[in-house]
Image (cartoon, rainbow, N blue to C red):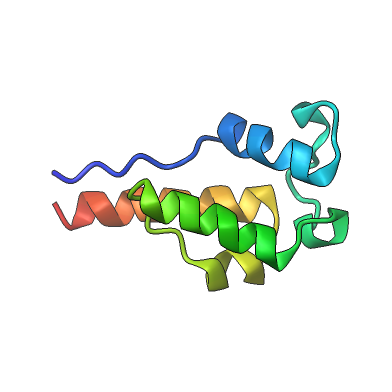
Length: 87
């Protein structure tokens, strides 16, 4: 069985908060559009690059298409499910 370690909600919040200028990661509305809040496509590319280097097959196009914490958590859950299916 292949286990893929993906970022948790807490890890995503902690990574996004400083980029978005939030003092408290808990302030981030999970359904808020991260691009509208200030996430640039360049910063998202950097995040995806770090995740890919860590072995997380995050897909930039999917994350940028639905830039909310809720959608990203679904994306990472699908990666985990795919890893379990491929095992």
